[in-house]
Amino acid sequence: MQKVQPMTLFGYNKLQAEVKDLKEVKRPGIVKAIEEALEHGDLKENAEYHAAKEAQKNIDNRLAELVDILGNSQIVDPSELEHARVSFGSTVLMTDMDSDEEFTYTIVGGCESNPDKGLISFNSPLAKQLLGKKEGDEVKVKLPSGKKEFEIDEVKYEEIVFDCD
Image (cartoon, rainbow, N blue to C red):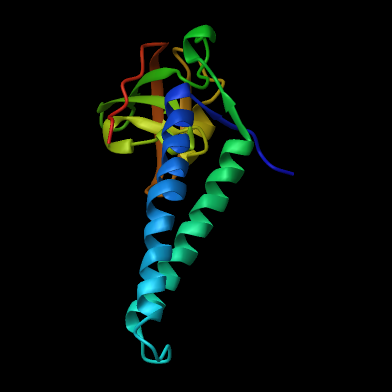
């Protein structure tokens, strides 16, 4: 059973663009490289051929992964959701109860996450433990770095700004 992959329209379009690039640019380039390597003869010691075949395999694996993700994707417009409780697209302001350090995270789809920019995947350990919480809640979370306790200061929706790579 496949899991639904929520994402914004931005994330969906980003994955579609990657599929197009792989199919129309990268894969044909690899096929051409394989053909050129074949012209060099002996395949046993033909490093270019083996490298190109490996690259082709990696592209085909990534294409299969993207097709699976897109096939299970559900485009969600976070601006249409209620954000009284933490949900997809919510921006959460919270304070570490030990250090008083403040953090701001926005919950996005897996392909859209960028923790350095405060965008965390809804599948991340932190997001899973924040979902459904509301302003004023204290939440104890288990993270890869250990246990932490946060107080949720605010849950809101604000337009998500993605970096265009």
